[in-house]
Image (cartoon, one colour):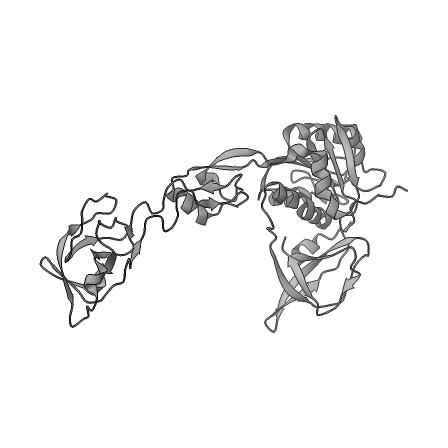
Length: 406
């Protein structure tokens, strides 16, 4: 029997980058309208002030604020109306003492004005403006550069583009962004028992699951170049992996990673051009038999065939590696809750325990979910996982735990 020499989970990323330093992120230019969820390659700085002029935030009249002091409903302040400013125009009008100029929201404040009185507090008698409320200095005015100064960093390297910050970029006339180039993935599902959606189902066969779960997980930050199902044949698997390394940056092989007689992944990687297996077994549960290798500068993962094990390994290794390469920082989506039962773990292995969340007495309760590793329903029953370190023997009921969402 072959035994796996396991690698500590904390060593994986450093080991991968040592073996394939060229994985470090590369830059490409992306159009603003296509930039949702893309990761910024470098800091973006404003090249102009926002706003570029003193701008009214209300519909009303530009005045000198000191001339409104003491104004009330019974004793208004009087101003002579001297025209208006149109939205979108650069005005050369200059406000003198005792004058008011109409300025709609978003329009430029004329020179000499230092406040805006909302139209709701005004009364008009021919060319005279009656102001029934005092205003303060620069009230209802956004000053030049108040939102952004030229040279200010708008978004930092590693920022994920959202609809909200797209609006800021558009306001600055930034329509193309330097972003990290997406990694191209190939997914190969192996096994005589695995069938695709176009194949007839027969007793003893298993419909491909991992190609779909992995493909959707990849869509968040990568591109799926191709998906294939390959039977348990060394030459066939070898040929498909060769093709995948030509078309992709990262190849995910589902199944064939344990130490059994028909587990070809390790052997296939070893005979590829520049092929090397540098991890065969990781100190985690589930996912211990995971393989990591390379062919020249292409990264290859041999993931467990069981769906839960496969997606867990993908999340904690592949996804986190990409986030690290793209300088995303700690993007873990997590929350805290209270453990409903005592929980045991395997000493010497980091355990990723599936859980289901319930709410009881306004408190988040975390319920561990147990089942055999091949049970696909574990994926629908669970909505996250907790991590028990390799030096933790277990957790007691009532412990406060950190839950990671898938």
